[in-house]
Amino acid sequence: MSNFLNKIGSRCIEQPQTAFSLSAASLLLSLAGVPIAWIAESVISLLVLRNGIKSGAMVAILALLPYSAILVFEGFYTSLALQAYLIAWLVAFAAILRSTNSWSYLIAIAALVGAFHVLLVQAMFPDIGSYWIVQLKAFAEESKVFEDAAQEKQDLIVLALSQYMTGMVGMFIVSTKLGIIMIGRWMQDRLYNPGGLRKELLAIRMPVVASAGLMICYLGMFFSPVLFKDLFFVAVLPFVCAGLSLIHAIAQTKKSGLIILIVTYIALLLLVFYVLNLLAILAVLDSWYNYRDKYRGKLK
Image 1 (tube, rainbow, N blue to C red):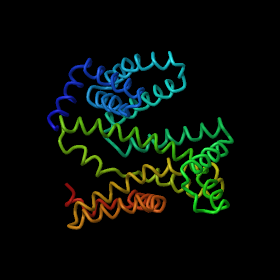
Image 2 (cartoon, one colour):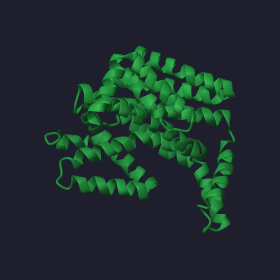
Image 3 (cartoon, one colour):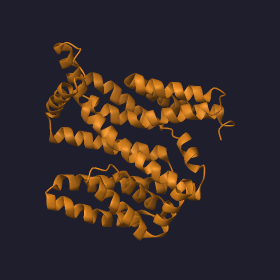
Image 4 (cartoon, helix red, strand yellow):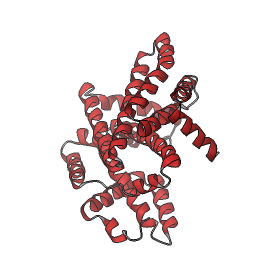
């Protein structure tokens, strides 16, 4: 399996027609309900990271042609525009990583882009909260997720969630694109720089200026909750990544490192909101005090 992945990655880099064929096929199969559009995006990000933005953008455009033809024929213009737009940002993000070799910089830029789009949605749809209330109530009724709770409590939960939903969707999209780029980087790492990705991910750390921005977002939730609650999840994403990076960096210096990681991720699954905040606080402190300096001799 390992050799097979290496051959596929190498062929995509050296033979643009292979990259085009694989990307186009993945996008077309995604129209049939097969969830493999991420393969096309991974190939595109790999090409940008290795060969440059021109190579990746060309394959992306060509792969989108047959995909676009079907969507236009079916009349799904909005879906086509959204997919093309997201792939364009994917190419841009991969190009940023290629030029900076810094996940910290890339994640911070991606979060700013996500925050801009959250603000744009709020400006275009001032009553977006009402839309989310309707959607959440429909979901709750269909899934019966709140069936044991009183109606008044259900309404309070739905109202609370609706204030964060635009930002949560923004965070999900940004996280997905960063994950795709990570797959591309992983493939590049296997072929040309074994171990390089691990070192990059262990070094994610937010600058002090970014931590000041997060503090403004936290304070803003008390003064303008509608605006800043929507921005919260996008704003906190870089710090969650930085916090996890720091925990991984420290864990590798401890004999109990594996236990530390297991406990961290179980807590993240069970107590999402609280752990996100704790990771963000840890990352903010790290941006000021650089805790990795204490373990510099032990980090590999």
